[in-house]
Image 1: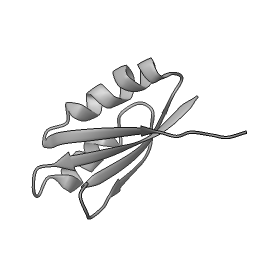
Image 2: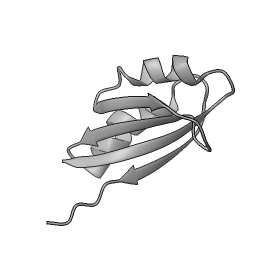
Image 3: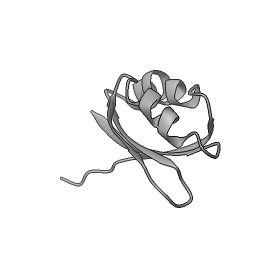
Image 4: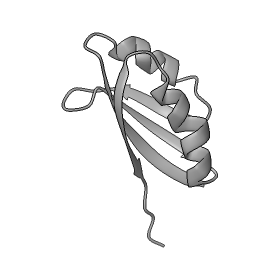
Length: 78
């Protein structure tokens, strides 16, 4: 499994509505509305990078109000 944090910028005033929609996307484990350079942070998981892009990231980018995303895959050291 691939874990990733997706840092998301949205239009002013759209954070809460966008976060609610993102919570129903397959593979999303947690959604937090934050302050700072990003407005929403999503913790997601998928079977592969390809699945992360197709099943998680694309639907998030399609949420109304989303202007930019930055995906940060988690590295694990064993």
